[in-house]
Length: 151
Image (cartoon, rainbow, N blue to C red; front, side):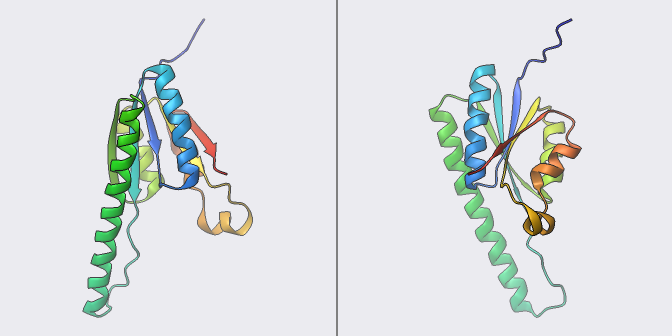
């Protein structure tokens, strides 16, 4: 019995890093091979905010969020331009919250057949403290996850 699921929609998660760029190459290749749509997802994680501080810190916090949003939108526009050039049908999603949660939720709600995500290849203490978004996505996603090691 042949149980090959066709891949129609691929969710590509990006943080716009070098490892994400390598994962993008893989996502483009998979999308082209399968004539699949690519959902490019970037999650803006909230900036930690110390409540009870003076008003100036609230202004700074708002400024940081504004700059982060602007940079994310610009990077996503550039990414969408690249996908258009290589003739990959794509849509972008800028989400807010915990990266791994938002990626998994988006994959479910958008009915992605696969997630493609880069890994930073951290080891030791930095992995322990930073955690791995890719690792958390792998453990909680309901569809296959392709990881691409950056370097």
